[in-house]
Image 1 (tube, rainbow, N blue to C red):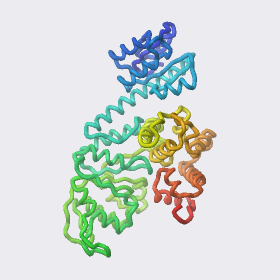
Image 2 (tube, rainbow, N blue to C red; image 1 turned 180 degrees about the vertical axis):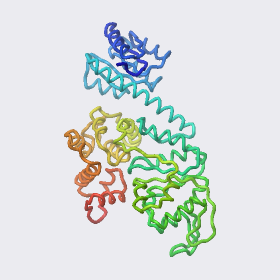
Image 3 (cartoon, one colour; image 1 turned 45 degrees about the horizontal axis):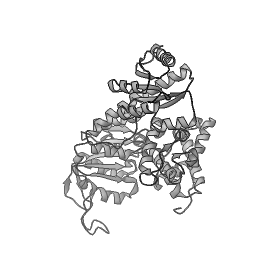
Image 4 (tube, one colour; image 1 turned 135 degrees about the vertical axis):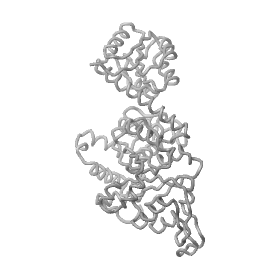
Length: 456
């Protein structure tokens, strides 16, 4: 059976090994070229783009690591696989640290090399696709989004398509998936980029205070209203208003918000004169608004006004292939301020990060990396540097029973585990989970967990 086509460069100073590998790959339908050494490989790389380079390490003056560095610099989308007859843990660590996609010790089975090539080609394709879409976004002012998985690429595409317009956007996704980052990317790539981006967390304010914040109020409208105040809709005029946790607003405010969206004008609390506004709304929720409509908890007409364009942000467990990229991004971010001597992760550490189910999603990953960097001893992050919750969760998953549980049960067990590890300290538990205190209380209430009294 023929594999999907791809362009591969085989580099080895052993003519027999080089030819055997090239012939096997050609039989699988690949376009294969060969090089007898590192210098020849680099020269070919200047003349032609390769999807994958399979290169021996021990080769005269120009070795495989030199080939790796040259291709990483000139063709970062090419996946490099290092091959060696002298396999070792140190060699694997060094290969991955320098940017190799994979590392194989000779002799390897045909099926092993076929699997690596298939994965390498997919990796190369995703990197190119990611680069193309992010370049499209960058041309309209850049994007803070990170990842190259098919799931996050779909988000990039939707952001690129929806940004130039004025349509209301509804972002759905679990806590910590990056909904505000997406909202900011939409604004940054829109014609409104030079105007205000105004975020408001609807769950953080009482109904009365939120109404005043959104629509403004007149002097004397209520106790404490000592002066007329513009609302956030007016602040966001000609710009973008980001309504986070939109599912938490009550019925009365839903009616008023619907009227503002329809009429494009606001009335201050305690006032009668309408104020015209031109605001693009991006709303976000971690709740199922469609179900809330069916349950009579959210207005159907408001739901359809908000749900003009819907973007669903995948949880981190559904885009595990992005974890290495995200982990390295957060590592660079944290190390630049706290510990510049740390250079990366050993493969076992990255494997633990990739296996963990991340109920707090990207925000939890960032917090784990920040904590790990603060406690790490050497230049590479070791498995023991990770929090016990991450290491224990991997052990449970390896046992096979955890994968049979429902997502709710996994989240409940993880919440209980974090609370045990923190001795019930709600501040520390929320930080480890990558969520705010309000979300922690909601999770505990949903799972019937008593958090006790007090702030700690």
